[in-house]
Structure formats: structure tokens, C-alpha cells
Amino acid sequence: MIFRNHRHSVLFVCTANQCRSPMAEALFQHLLEEKKDETVKWKVESAGCWAYPELPATEKALQTVNEMGCSLIHSSKLVTEKLLRKFNLILCMESDHKQYIQQHFSFAANKTFLLSEMINKKDEIDDPVGKSLEEYQITADKINSILQNGFVKIKELSA
Picture (cartoon, rainbow, N blue to C red):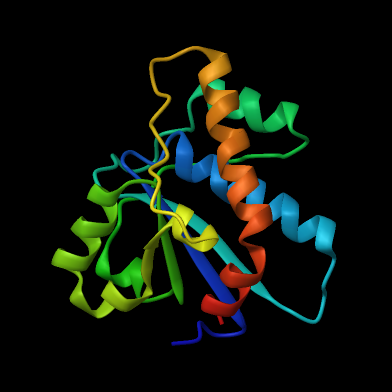
């Protein structure tokens, strides 16, 4: 399903949509800006399987992506059928997120992957919530590395 005027669409998913998936959203938007391919339109968002709607990203998530040159204006969203139907690719931080979506939203099963599957791995991105700023930075670096190295696959699957 192609979403309106967007040829490519990707939704990043974590637990509460306050750390990992907003960081992934911001880092991916930044990567798209660096690539400057105006012939391709993108829709990029994030959500959480068990999120409380309209909460901000954590301070450490904001600080981490800001230090990486990204901007993040964020309000948490819950994964819903309506939201999932708007995206061609759903990238999850943990197997629990992937399984939750596949079990509760079967129409989305074939377009839901772990983020690390974009580089042919099955690693989980651990939640840094409640941990040090250094742990957030390690998490963001891991996400950023996967986004950069898996960009071609993300682009292919998100069309």
C-alpha cells in the first residue's frame, strides 16, 4: 500500500515511543536530508506498542540526537491499525514489538521487521530508559549504524 503522495514510508516502533523509536525517526530524517534525493518522497514516523499518547521524548533522547546534529520534536503515539495501514515498512527495536504487531495486526505481518534485519542480523536494540546518557549515545550510535548500512534495503522495502 502506498500512502497518498509518499512513495516510501517507514514507521519505527519501540515500547513507549519515548526513546528508541523517536531517536530512529530523527536519525533517519537526518540521513534523508544528507542524501538529498528530492525525487523520492518519504513519510517517516514512530510509535510504541504500549505507549501512552502525547508524551514527549525523554530528555536524554533529545540531548543525544541533538548532539548528533538532529532535531526532534516529538509526541508519543500508540501503535494502532489505522496508523500501521499508512506505512509500507514497520521497523521494530525488539522481537516483542515485532511479535505484538504480527499477532494483533496480521495484515502488517509481512511488512514488519526488526530494525537489525535491515543489515541481515536479528539483534535487538536495548531500551536505554532509566540509564545513563552514555547508554543513550550507545543506543543511538547502534541505530544510526543500522540506518546507514541498511539504507538500500530500507528504501527497497519501504516503497
